[in-house]
Length: 493
Image (cartoon, rainbow, N blue to C red; front, side, top):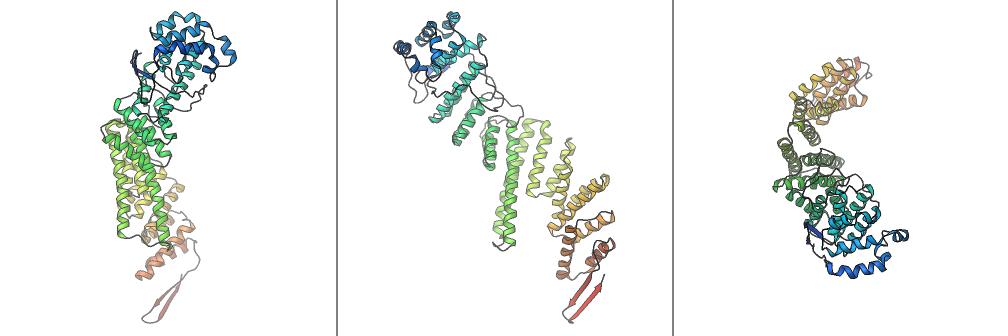
């Protein structure tokens, strides 16, 4: 068999024409050297004569899963002679098939594949027959589907039989050697089989073995990358985001070399985990605010921050690997992922830095992302970052100005910075923009609470007058009670 290795395109959907239920028993690692995996009973060639004799008489029993009665009538004497010769293993299969080429139909050659794929027979012959068919340009679409379905059946039986992952990889190597190239990645098909059978540890071991041996695979920057990326993607689809991150980092730190795209998939998993974590944290704070649970103490807050920081550290580590191994062409994608991470984690200054990094590498972020980062920075009262981000509104439309300043306003409100929120609202009015009703109410209520805490009414009076001048509120009655003198002071605005 040839020693060349091939790579395969991504798995999309497998619809084999033949449904085979036979087990892969034996494989060949080198020409005419037969190796039997664990639990495999190798059938000696000397038994073939008695078995083929039974096959001649009871051929419908041997092939009843694959041929109809009409097919049985069509099988020639040459078909049985070919099988008998191949089972003797006295000559190379290619010599036998070459000699009997004119006596065998395309259908009979397919049935030879089926015969040797059955349990208890020498699967090596099926591989050799397919290789000869390929070299003779006799592999049409139907034959390819047949051989692929045979191989998938063998792989499935190996996994069901809990064989070592090395045996599964050996089979893939044999497929490569005979030039079997289906229209999908067999490596990803194997991972899917492990995953669907809930053999997740087996899937991880299989990927480790593929990387350890350096088995060729296709890496074209597609949706799922290569074996590591595909397995990480499967984990992510099931919601196991941290498992996907740990998988990629573990393989890289074990001295193996996952494909570059797997790092980007793991970064996406970090983003998703941070997003889910933020959602859970908001719910927790909501429960605490409503009195359903007690407020988080300092120890719990520290644990939360530590977990979040750990995820961010993993994301930064992955981003460094992408840049080191993937080159500058992926810089924009890396900064995009980092931006999403910092937004989910509520890290305003870090998120702002990624916005400018993206701009420098020629990947402009969407305007909505600038507004979101602006709101985060406002909530954290990052004055310098807010000032830088606001420079964008100078060249935007009135509609976009209102949208951006509304995000700024809500950021200040969320952070409890009502003085700054009042200034932002006033700025909107100065530009001829009308703040939304709920935004106006939230700012007024916040500033009023500060009067009760600090006794400073100037900002509140100033804001009420400005809103009244813009006809956004009606006449207001402002009152203050001085407890020491038991005195009420009221003023109509």
